[in-house]
Image (cartoon, rainbow, N blue to C red; front, side, top):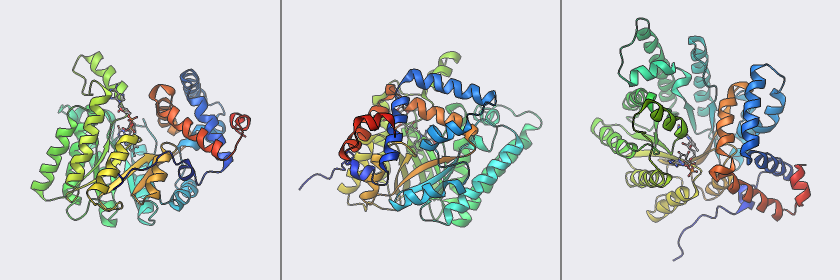
Length: 400
Ligand SMILES: Cc1cc2nc3c(=O)[nH]c(=O)nc-3n(C[C@H](O)[C@H](O)[C@H](O)COP(=O)(O)OP(=O)(O)OC[C@H]3O[C@@H](n4cnc5c(N)ncnc54)[C@H](O)[C@@H]3O)c2cc1C
């Protein structure tokens, strides 16, 4: 019998819904991002230009924003939702404003996330909602709660209001039976997030996996943490739901631990991260009746491994407890090939005002430089498909 193996290099499937024009634009943009010098210079100039209120919104919106975001509002994301849906890929509307810290902004963000939960319920093409706790609670208060520090007068009420916002989103999701992810963030605020997410799971996951917490396997304690969460859920009688990721804050984590002189919570090397990520996938799949999980990754080996394990264990590709997810604009070869093979797959589609998505865009641009290896993979695939379609090299380079 032949071993089951997904062909992620089938670029005809991976780029089936992209026109030649779109592919050429993507190639041109990724080629630019491939240069660390241009990426560094570009990000600094973009930040400065927004601060100086220079009119660069149009340029950003037509280039990196268009590549990695769905639009500025839910309504502007509709074309993307329907286009991905046409290829059996779900959209996860990710309201991306970061670093804003006032009660009125937190309230507005909570209302917007509430709308994404409602929007998700209306449409099979939007399988999940998502939010970041720092979108509805102040970073410093999460940090204090995580460090078990005493809150100042006034902060206790603020903390209660923050928890109430998280509760409002989660109870709305529960009432609609709409699953929602809680993203993971920096380790020094994560204890507070984990404890909130734990309370929400305990209350709302008794019948179905509604609330998903996120586990960052680049942390050296998280595989154990996953097993502990599973034991707790079993003991207390609810369904554990988790999103497994490697983790997005490695440099920040390392810099802080060095500066403040404590052992880094991040594994010493990538190999250890890959090992724990794959162990976590195996563990969740062994317990797939009790754990609902999402593999949030662009790592081809991890995606292949999970697909193969499911096939090997005769678990239906579209089992309602197993999901794959990638970020919009990245890893299309994985998403489209998975969908073509009937696996549950979705993409985070960030949206929000252009200037507020800049931190997100900068993370994506940095992640996509040649240093990470991700970019050469994307460029190879684009080159392969453009060649297959007979697009000449000069046309390709000009991006027109
Ligand atoms: C759907 C989705 C949801 C996500 N949600 C979150 C979230 O809630 N919170 C969050 O933090 N991130 C989140 N991420 C981002 C994720 O954590 C990774 O940063 C990103 O996906 C890259 O990892 P990878 O598995 O795709 O690929 P890979 O390219 O295989 O791995 C890159 C990752 O490996 C780790 N790494 C690389 N080099 C080293 C090294 N030398 N030592 C130790 N570790 C190393 C880092 O985590 C790096 O990001 C999400 C990603 C996706 C696709």
